[in-house]
Amino acid sequence: MARMPVMFIGHGSPLTLEQPQRLLEWQQWGTNLPRPQAILVISAHWETRPLMIGTAQTAPLIYDFYGFPEAYYQLNYPAPGASALASRVRQQLLQAGIAFGERPERGWDHGVWIPLLGLYPQADIPVLQISLPSQDVDELLALGAALAPLRAEGVLIMASGLITHNLRQWTPDGVVAPWARAFDEWLAEKLQRDDRQALHAWASAPGANESVPTPEHLLPLFVALGATERHEVMHFPVTGFEFGSFSHRSVQWGTGE
Image (cartoon, rainbow, N blue to C red):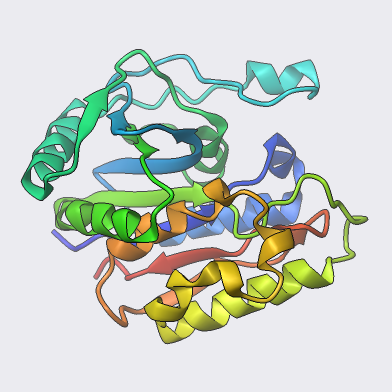
């Protein structure tokens, strides 16, 4: 079995599903990816300590957003649960000495099902979500490394967040905030060079204070990075901004070959 890629996707809001260009980019990305046996998701919208393993069954979605039209609260993503993957995740966490618990009643938040509606709209691949357990970069890299062997078993590791995420400083659509562009370009350059030492110090990068006023949307990136090898082939399947302060830059490591 070919080793699956690792991905970080800028998941956006429910409005992303109504942006034809962004939705097309997600659909093309999903088409170009090798088909996984299961998908393991780490979303910015579930933070716990210690790490929690979510439902291994199909469960009602979590509509963790407010003030949208009623139609958004009727969206569904009835993918199969992933009980076999949950067992393997437990084994890997135990082996790595990473503490964890179980939340079998918790469904998938919008950081999971919004991008999956674009990538795999058929909803026919088993999905498992685990929580983001720390804001420490080293701990997140170690978590990614513990999960990395699952790639050889057909598991797509998907980290879901946003590289820039400032809800208080919106600009008109099409007008990119200078600080958001500066941070987005800085991060892209460091990823291209696989400069992990510089990435570790992201908080001192140009535009970081405005682009990442709270870190939860950026941090899933480090779980994904930890699941990769040094200087593994990498590219950006999606780039660009939404409302000027939300970078949709997404990253794929590996090719599945």
